[in-house]
Length: 231
Ligand SMILES: Nc1ncnc2c1ncn2[C@@H]1O[C@H](COP(=O)(O)OP(=O)(O)O)[C@@H](O)[C@H]1O
Ligand SMILES: [Mg+2]
Image (tube, rainbow, N blue to C red; front, side, top):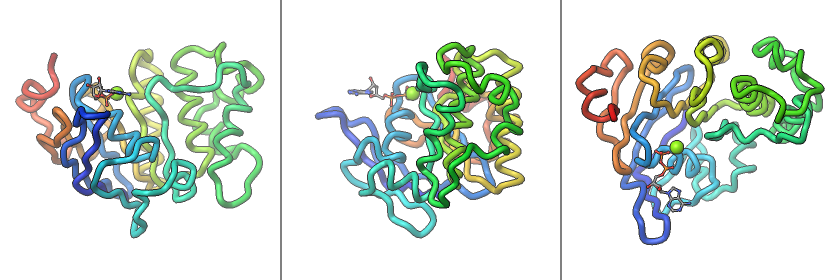
């Protein structure tokens, strides 16, 4: 569903992505792992179109989206839950969710009830300011906002970072549900190995801008974790 082919990206003269190729299948959660600073967020921003690669390609299904702007990619079914959540603190929860509706191509103007079924707390908190929510609630809001665009491919950049364990579990179960019931393609940047093993199907480990290991999450051995992920 999402294919990344030999992607190179530099910040000025500093080469950050060095020939990344990945394949993310429909109905699976693919996890992108790696230590801090190896280029995970840079990769996600290239996939979303916030950054433009020096070379290489990105496809969604049969469609080459490499030269499209982020809002055009959104209309091809791509949505991003950015690192640090980046919800709008001065908008209400409902207004935050409405922002996500803009990516839709079907003209739906109301927040789908499904989002409140997945995250009931967003219904309870509908009139509160985004900035008044806890970190975990804000993360659920960021995911809800992305889902409001009715994506086929959902990108999440370290959604468990700084979130309490019970909400991490809830988020994991929601993502699993999207993968199994809606056959969504989920791409999860994640450093939390237990979460990857519990909820993910495939993994890629990135080191200094290159893929150094990949496989099914059963193949994510403690040797690999030790070598590429432990600090
Ligand atoms: N806007 C930027 N300008 C220059 N260098 C950057 C910028 N953003 C990130 N970097 C550098 O690029 C490298 C990869 O960063 P990033 O993609 O954020 O890594 P990760 O998400 O894996 O922690 C790091 O060395 C980081 O310092
Ligand atoms: Mg990052």
